[in-house]
Image (cartoon, rainbow, N blue to C red):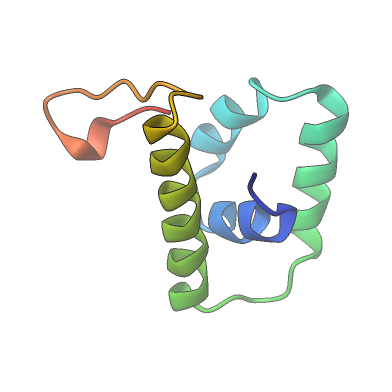
Length: 82
């Protein structure tokens, strides 16, 4: 559901440790392609990164509403996992 450009842009400013957690849930080929996309991406404005992150969150909420995924939340939204 998420465009590869949005995913790469959204992860552009994410710390490497958090990226690794994400990559572990992908196929090796998919993770390698995403890593390459992020490395090849030109400097990106924070507003563009945040817009892509918001797009992904909106897609996740939509999929949750359809019952296609379950989002596990802790007491605090900043600790939510998809």
